Image (cartoon, rainbow, N blue to C red):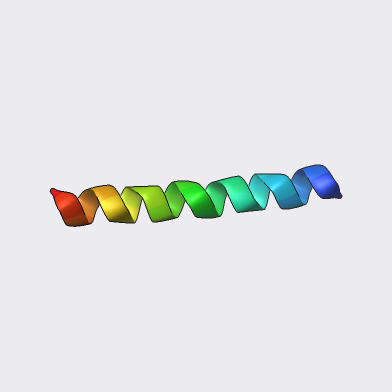
Length: 25
């Protein structure tokens, strides 16, 4: 369960990072 939660958090961070990069481009 904790691993699944960590995976979800990582995915969220990845999405935020992608959105930020897109904004700067």
